[in-house]
Picture 1 (cartoon, chains in turn red, yellow):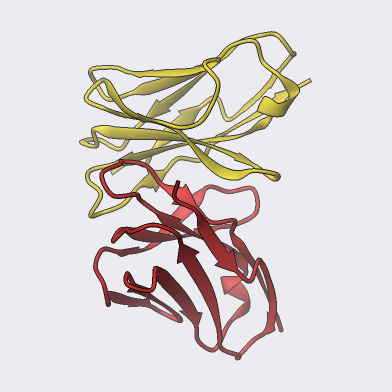
Picture 2: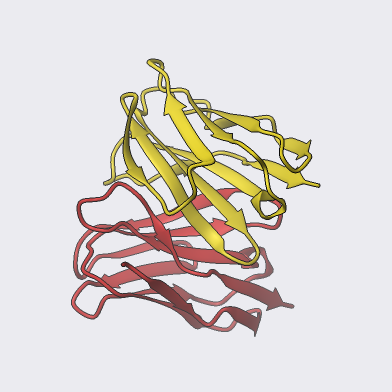
Length: 111
Length: 112
């Protein structure tokens, strides 16, 4: 059974700093997704990573995928308060049309 | 394009009752999935439909069921509600896995 683990689960950081959220998964897959959720809101798609070595960037966020290590990272550069949210990674098992989510990382960025 | 819509947005039900939630996918999307989000269990997959066929089902009891109509709209039903069914129920639609899933605003169900 596919398991997805994120760390850290809680992250408090200062504006202007850099940090990385890690997403590990337990079985082979080359379909990984990152989502953002604001309090009381739904999930917003951030990145779709579909191959080993895939790297995508949008603003201060950059995501990468290493399928051999079964690891994805979400890197935050020069954090700003607007990035405060909960970030989820999700993996789609091979041959199955569903998403298995990590626990989420609650990110708080302080001025 | 309009996004995924879900109705109702909020619902309060009593234990033992049943409930039906509705989801309208983005136009052209034929795959519709449902997820349950709770503070304790996080986000869990319920089921996925494509062209009116259930292709995948999560690990939920038979009280949870769903269907998809020919226009891709989907409904999920929960019978004999329990307190633990209180959750945010999210619907997502997708044109294909290379694009990912687009989530609706959710239906917040409270069971008392």
